[in-house]
Image (cartoon, rainbow, N blue to C red; front, top):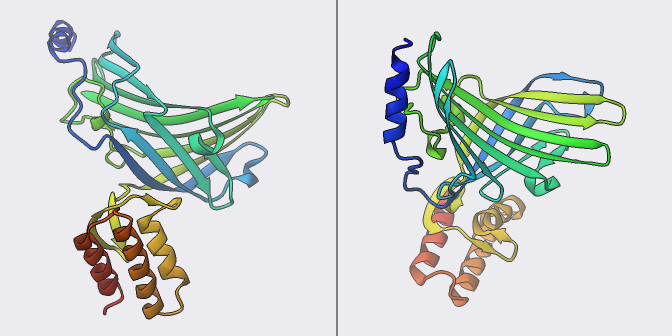
Length: 272
């Protein structure tokens, strides 16, 4: 295995430093995770489940991109920070943490290494972490995963490499420190879902094909979902959707064809 060292170094020199695949500039993901175990004296504040969002700007260049050549691995380490990456989480007990909620700094790190003298050929690690501290306390949330022996491993730290659900035991960790009393409380969760948030308007699980956007402080998808939850009947729900779509068309925010697509999808969603 040691004979691979010069060859791998040569390949890394020849390979471009950063080649992101073509994607939407910013992609938002929703994740959910279930509690594995807790540690510390104040774990009652953590719930048995956590869900949240992660955003990644796939067109952003890393602020750190280093070639790594250690005794046991060769590859790259890359790091991106907010606003090019964010993470937020809310547990079912109401505990909240993350970039949008607390501020702080989000770090997204990607590592892609060939391993030498190891039981594995390669490892890719990806972590999104938000950290904030002040006045004797600090909060931390991270989602992390790793993939061993990935056939697509190329020794390059690229955002497009990372898919937590393809990894080995992806986890979410929430930490709460009280540095005054030297107390640390932690909760560890197993990731269940990690899916991109649709960029088109979705009604009752049906895709309108119309690009989603914010209107009066909420996305159109969320507004229509709220209509569905609060309407006393299907007729009232459809009336609310038609009223909204007329407003959007008159404001020049959608075309008449898009208005029809929204209304027709709403009808299909209630079986009418």
